Image (tube, rainbow, N blue to C red; front, side):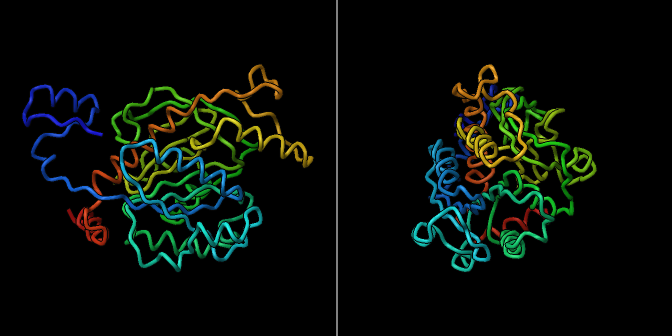
Length: 314
């Protein structure tokens, strides 16, 4: 949350240069408060685990958030009960007349398919198109980020020689962007994917900017220059044991899989992994909620479309 200070306080300019969020009295008196509306498009097969992970991060904020989960009507979920979906989820048809301050589109284990070959691709495209007039800011995770880049910008993914799998050190490229405010210049993030989006694709797109990454992982965090779209290509939301479950699942299934990098102490799968990315994850999600949603979304939520049109015409 911002610090409120007397307008024209000399320290204000210095703190602003250091990327500290300071609000003068004039702006503070103009603020209105209401519950934020966030919709989560949960594409993960492990839906309940993903629910816990994302809600844990969204709750790490003083902001009040009303969360709605939706699932794909055009896809039969195999790892969750129908009763769970009926009780705790909605479909796109059920929420398409509503407006949301924020939206999260998760990853999905469908990287091996061309986007158009995914059985719910048309429905997901409808959601992304609908979001242009009904959602203020969207955060995309892993395959969800690749799907959004492909749909909104025509940027495709490329296969990796082997799965990017483990905990990787990431370096900030732009410390002054609000999404990474307060983060260390070096931080960790889990990755688990078979595909990537080349760094050059971002560098050649004037409407996109890279916020963090590394030589090993490529781009890990990017955004649109207007901050409306956030793309996270790792899994900052993962729990300490998530990569281990994926590894043991593939080993038991006889799939070719290497041990996750920088994950098990001493590379011993019998030892318990240490969680070393939670601070970065909490910071990213809290900053998204605060700076990209709460601070800028219109108080009258139905004015979201007008608000973005006004920004584009400014």
